[in-house]
Length: 144
Image (cartoon, rainbow, N blue to C red):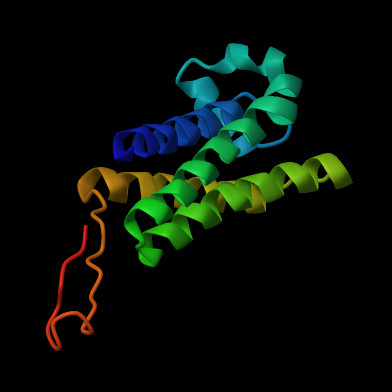
């Protein structure tokens, strides 16, 4: 299960970044980076990226990090893992509902998602030991 959530987190990050790179009029800073690395052809699919793919990939990353919480119970990893995709989803909502540019939400969200993914690659999460002093009187008892 851990491999699946880690892979889904990375897929959500990569999909969100590529989707944002395909929308030159909405997110010009990251779209210019995408054009510089040869992804300029994606601008013809801008509507698909913004309406469908960007929210889908952000939701994939959000659910992968939520499942990671249930597997590892590490809130220091979970909080940035959830905030990043939520900011990306908020950026899509602001852009679609109000028609305003929302790079001020998208860019920090993608940066947090990227930092969390790098952190997960460098130092994979391990399940936190559960302590219960009631069983043996004192001391830590590892369950699981």
